[in-house]
Length: 191
Length: 278
Ligand code: SF4
Ligand code: SF4
Image 1: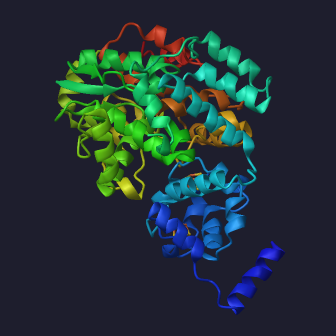
Image 2: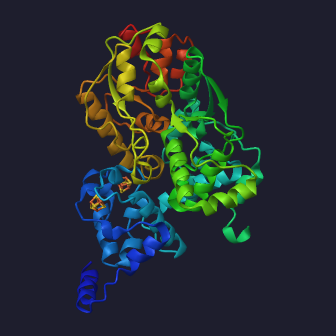
């Protein structure tokens, strides 16, 4: 953080803040983070702000300050569950969920170090299930997630309880037109 | 009345009881539901979290399967939100719409009416609903719980506000609803699987404050919330969480309610018997 602050003051001295990162984000998502007035409304209602290294308003401040690396390697972008509690509150109508989505995709694309790897693995398990069947298959997601994270025994009893309450189907329900699903998941250059 | 229906993955799997009670309710209210043919998962939270384009296309494929000028009814608030969001996005970016329409050879209507079942009920004459009731909910104190997804973030803020609809519905059948602070607090969604401690804290707070406010149960419109509240609550004393369609089904005279509650992890039957509702 000290390092960041010194870069920051250096940048300010050199008058080098040109909101490069903010502009990049606006180009990718249409969101203008410079609109944020730092009222902290978002962070006061965010249910997971305490687990994050920077609560949402501070993350936005870091973007305004062009501290790209700090933002992209923060745990905030992974812990955000996209619940919209913040943007419902925001007087400037900033779509914080889309902002987090955009930051996450930049972090993935640039192969950044991910401080909450289990969360990314969970999303990948869900995506692979949708890609395979067109729908989510909860049991498969649980097993796939466990094999990715090697947390074999976490929630073991819960899994059994859910099975006994018939909350987990053994076989997936599938989309018939699988070709359309595969096309959705194909990278754009493959189409 | 005929409505097209998008069940979504939760209602088709982990929340079968919600789907079944909905079927009962629609039977009593003379609504005909037609499943969207060959629907796919809307991508839930994971798709837009890591691949926004895939998330958009998944929702749009579902939308393209809706016949022209028909109304689509959705039960899962997360799916509903994804529908609304995707409709807004193709209004802003018509290019994507044309690519997909071309690929699938089906039109995608960004203005199609996509609503939650609560909205269908809100449009009905309260007298009609009352006349159909065979039981009542007298003596039951309810904490209405909307979860976070029935909110209206910036892009879709012109949609209907759902708050108050559960209260109106439950009170019209004699239940009391309590005032409490966490009616739209997020249950933690996927953190329930990927980071359980964070969810446990949120869920305990939700159920704890509901109990402090004097509620005997929670009634929710979100199947994922219902599951998280049941599996992640570590409080010694717990109260059950109903899908709103379950209580409605019981009121309207459904007889197979026992089979719904076998899917619950916190058994609500003692409460219903205690209040002489069933
Ligand atoms: S609520 Fe909006 S304006 Fe206020 S700090 Fe958060 S993002 Fe900025
Ligand atoms: S969407 Fe993310 S940042 Fe906003 S309140 Fe929810 S968890 Fe916090």
